[in-house]
Amino acid sequence: MPVHTSHTDIIKRLKRADGHLKSVITMLEEGRACVDIAQQLQAVESAVTNAKQTLIHDHIDHCLDGAVHEGKQSADDAIAELKAITKYL
Image (cartoon, rainbow, N blue to C red):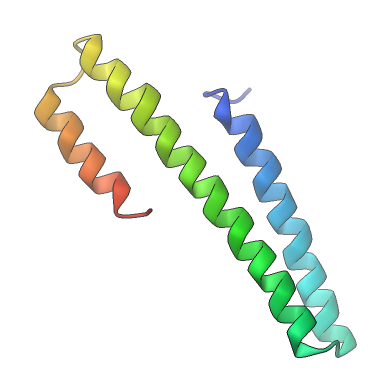
């Protein structure tokens, strides 16, 4: 069971990326045109980037904000964690 509601969407995006990546491998094995392969690689990259952004934004919105408001984390610790995670954006 996913921890966050966004995890279901992230899983869908990553499965889509997995499908595109498998297509790229097949295309390479079949000797398909480089422009077609590059297009599929772009789709992989976009799907992974979107999944990553969704995960990070969800973490900021729910984990960090909630932890500070519930007193589980200091504002300084939340800011440090925010800085750490946003380097992946």
